[in-house]
Image 1: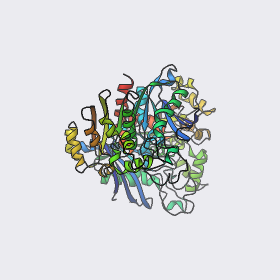
Image 2 (image 1 turned 45 degrees about the vertical axis):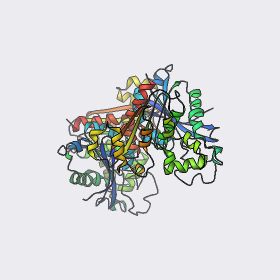
Image 3 (image 1 turned 90 degrees about the vertical axis):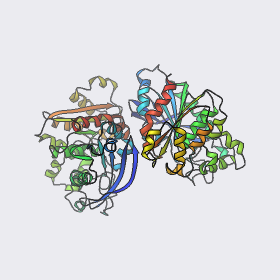
Image 4 (image 1 turned 30 degrees about the vertical axis):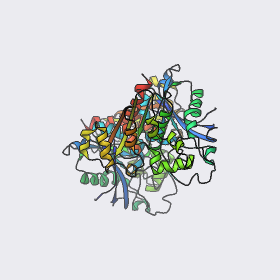
Length: 311
Length: 311
């Protein structure tokens, strides 16, 4: 459970720590970043809540820390931010570095059951258990009782599933352009087929946000999702509240490339969540799948978490 | 003067344009980024002022746009931001790609006079004349009468020299961790020796911010400079206003690596600027030479420019 500090970088009045540890769930050394807001240094007895950011395909724990600008609002609100990696690294499994959407950088936040991936592709256990335990043991100023989660694309799906599989564990969840129904898109089918096996549809369902939300019986949901739609016509600005109608219009031919490819399927998630509470899907006209989008709406997502973490 | 648009990316309500053009001063195709704030689309007749960001060694026009967080305040204030490259590219001059601190990525915002660099290393002409002319011709919503400049490290020096060499051309100037007296540091001596010649000390002085500020006879200066000092003791927090005393203490053994190497020399600039107006040197305790520092103080620097651009 010991942690190595590779660098301490000042950021928005707090400290961004570049850390690593030997993780048993993923069977390798894992790098991660932890942002401690200024409130942790001005008052050593003050405990701050934790917001976990799950990154997308090809990313590491660095992308969000460098380009997401989540520290801007986290500093103001007094929230620590944890930036984990997206997969184990260097396990020497044949083919682990062959694709951008499977293996290294593409752990999908699941526990693989199929050989050889089950030897370390246990990102679900790593993110829900080993990593936060390590953080709470080593950084007493971080409050283990107040944790929220959010993410982007593959990480948006990770955030939704970890929240839905663990009622009460996370105070809130939000997502940028999440893969929302992996069982029905190419990326998800490749990942779930590889990590679980083609025939293991029960496993697929247990790890698919759209299937999970159908079965949700916890507190009424309050989920914030930003869907990006570069070519959405301007007139839709006036109709943001009509979520279903908008989703339908998005479906009919606008949106980002990955949306167009049918990789994201937010409309499936929204439909499956009917009657389970609030799913605030905002269509961000003109925005794309990049970190420029996250930076723009960073304050909103940290603010969404803050309403629960600081309640 | 025609400009190619490679991408249009939404950012903080405005548009970040990835552009390129064939530049005659640098004798090659030059990429650059231009951020147009939301005010330019909501009212097509509204002209916005321009803030030019000059990046440091090894950078391109992308670093500031992706990691500087300048669009955050520029969007709110209604300011366009121009992110040029740091040198010509691909001129096939022998040795141009050999060092990080000379040639490609290290144009130092000067007009080289020594062969073979004088065949395209004309970044002074490019930044002060050709590039802004191209921007104003192609983007009528950008106001050629209201332009400010700022930069980081080599680009901080670029901003200071371009401001000081052209009284009235720029409404304001600020800098992050600038190389402040290149004639007296290794980076500057290598660059000026290479671009002007070892013996051309008059040329060196004409392009050194510390020499230029001694001769300043324009309006009283109001320059904002953030100096970074990772190991500055905490007690100095209470003494920020005593600039000279602080500079002296920094000199005695704290600061970022490049400061320690004697590459930055802000104290020389501050001393040379005595009696010329206000040089607000802020010592940023614990901060380093990275874009995390720029992101943290981005709002302050855009705000400094805004006070002049929107006056």
